[in-house]
Image (cartoon, rainbow, N blue to C red; front, side, top):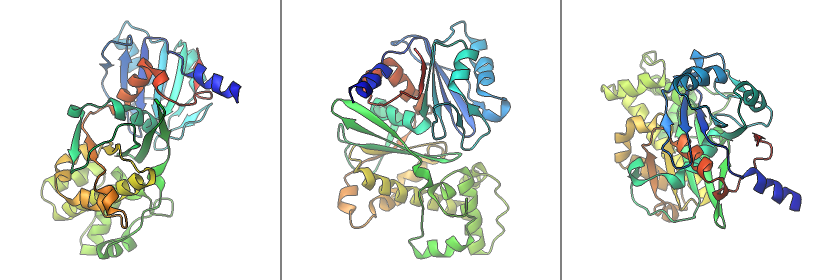
Length: 345
């Protein structure tokens, strides 16, 4: 036991600067460079995974060729369950091997996180101008917080406190089962395309999920569902006044509220529930209606608990990098075992 505790403390030793940070999603990669602990993060253009054969090439062409500052440490936030030797992205074709990246990019250290683990680390660091409060409720310090993000997939992360240290928790909560509750749901469900043979949160609350939901709504209404090929088409059509797309977006907000309420109950997230990802911030105006909070609070028999838990929409467009930067500056504030995820010094 003493050996394990010592190893964990060693894993949380300071990282060598400069630090290159990368948030690798299912579609895009976002890069940031932290020259020293108290310097601002330098951001670089967001690039698409499909434009590059591998991560090292994307990093070289996007960052290393654009700066004279060469990183010593690479912090990766990866949209997949992180493995020690290699991690395959869930919704893209890249495979990341930290030891190989360390050698190829001439780095002293490589540390890997799940993308929503990194996003969870950002939650205590977000300022009032980086979030929008949805409804009532007041966040309690050092109480559990949850973040959900619908984009290419559906990510879920959380952070809890153990004494003075924050514990980010990675998971695959986007793949929990999701079932019908209302009469309208029971009309829609028979027309839903199943993902891997089942309906999960990600089946509906993702870019492709919006298309599945839109087609099911069209089928119920006896309309042609071929007008929207991807999630962006659905949000664009809704903004243009398409009633079927508008109904789809209403359902998206309602279903996201239900799932957020379930996760709030799972952890009693009195520190707040946060919405990130690529979709919700693009349709922020929809969260000003009571639909989301009504669905969030309507998890009987615990309405009284949920009405006191605050919910927030993250408006900061690179929150996972905020979490990685917070770790880089002061890793000892976190309690996380990196014994299999830190390569090098």
